[in-house]
Structure formats: C-alpha cells, structure tokens
Amino acid sequence: MATMSKSDRETKKRLAYTMYVENGFEQKVIAEITGISENTISKWKRDSNWDQDRQELKAGLDNVRKRIIRMYNAWLEQIEQRTPPANVPNSKESDALNKLADAAKKLQTELSLGHKTETGKQFISYIQKTYGQSRAVEIVDLWHEFLMATS
Image 1 (cartoon, one colour):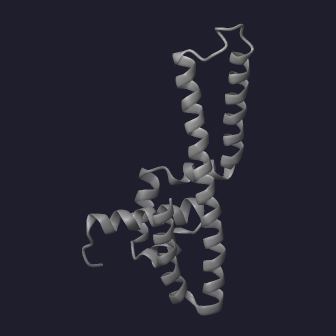
Image 2: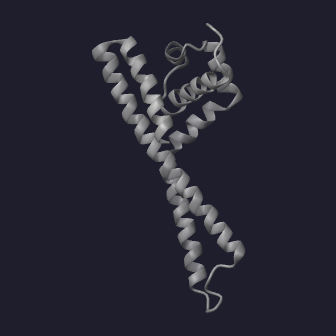
Image 3: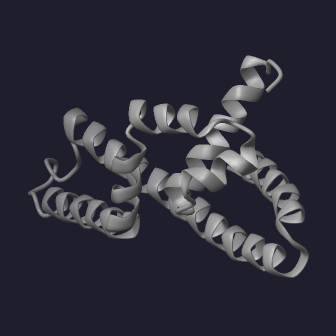
C-alpha cells in the first residue's frame, strides 16, 4: 500500500472503529473496505480497547442515559424540597447537575449516531446484495463521510 497521510490514516482508523464497534463488521471485511491490513486493524482494536467499546455499546446507551436522567431528576427534587432559601442548588450541586445533564446530552448524541449507523448498515447490506461488493465499498466511504460531517 502506498504511504498515506496522517489525516487519511486517522480517517480510516475512525471508519474502521465505526465499522467494528457500532456496526459489528469483522476485521477481514474492514480490511477489505478500508485497504488497511488486518494486522493493523487488530493492533488498533487491541490498543484502543475496541472490544470493550463494542460490549458497552451493546449494554445499551439508552439505559445508561435514562439512569442519568433519573439521578438528575431525583437530585433536583431533593433540592427543591428543601426549605427556602436552601431550595436552590449550591455551587457543588449545580456543577454536578450540569455534568449529569452534559452526560445525558452526549449519550443522546451517541444514540443518534447509533441509529444513523444502523440505518447505514442496512442500506449498505442492501447495496452489497443488489449491486455487489465494489459498489458497497463506494457507499461505505460516502456513508462514513456523511457520519463524520453530521456527528
């Protein structure tokens, strides 16, 4: 393979990550689509804990998001039940509530990306069956560009 720029390599790494973690593709298929060797993909996978990310994703980001929202609401309710003027969050409570809200928002964004990738996976599978592997590879590249531009 010809030498590629660091930027192109990082783009391919992100694509490989998305295909492996979020879409469940096997390394051999990822290697074929990205043009990166299976050994390199295996190294990326091992060094960055892709298997753990894949398992966590399967555990259900939506459930985690719901737990965070329940914690946020319960904490806020306790604060609001205090006698005035103590029924507003202090600086530490405000900070913690903001962090919980940010975490819930981040998970919502990741869930949105997950839905997009699932739709893309189904569409790419359709293209592969209908138009063949080479056309599917073209679509994967375009789909990855779309995901990177909209996430």
